[in-house]
Image (cartoon, rainbow, N blue to C red):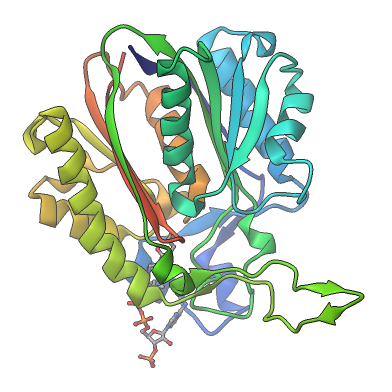
Length: 322
Ligand code: UT7
């Protein structure tokens, strides 16, 4: 028994911000951003919230699957930019959707978050605890990005994506691998509130994303092919049998590096980061929804999904689309 995706949905803020527009904010250029990242524009919230975007994406996934919110048994939201510390985003989304029967909670594994949430849903369903799950990845990163730091602000975008999954007897999610390396947590981080109470008051760094881009780049190009090879080995599937590699959309050069190491043609690596930038945990489900709605996912196709990011966290799964 495994899970299969029976519906996908996504939502992006209305405002699109081009590289040209960023030129007036930081010392950068459209040419530099395109050449080093492949990004041309991204969607930035001017009022849309993590909950409104994620609820919209979830609603579209339900509609795509022909299911009602009341049927959902598990609702997982992967995010590293929640609106509130408490309650969790998933409970807020549950309320917005009217998914009253669902058990809802968040999961934060940064850019690997959606993949880890999907695998978590799979484990619950395989254990027979729930029959279906709504799995979402949503981010409003624009509020935690330092808009004076050209090394990071040009990369990120806001958005949300979701999948409705249910148990199946064959095909679907064939296997997954997940890894975490907390010892390298400092290469990509964003501080939360400092310790402040009547007994102590600590200083903190600005609560914005801080990143050693080169380190993250090297980590991704080295470790993602390893995790993909690991999951392919585990499931007995060859690189040549994979129809599409749906990777976290961080940087076109990272994706090219991964393709090269795997010896797989770049045409099998769909990309949307040119339009949406890096949306962390929303990247994979948004891309999956675009491919689904464009009719590019056919029954029987083998997909590899792979996420990687802060933590460091990374993981991959293989699925047969149904
Ligand atoms: O989901 C995971 C999230 N993070 C990532 O995926 C990030 C992975 N890393 C990357 O994508 C790349 O490392 C970046 C795109 C962030 C940077 O590209 P790079 O080729 O590694 O550039 P660099 O950091 O080595 O910087 C090269 C130069 C530097 O100038 P100097 O010291 O050579 O004079 C930077 O100051 O480029 C400069 N630079 C910029 N120039 C124009 C850095 N950012 C910019 C910018 N515009 N936006």
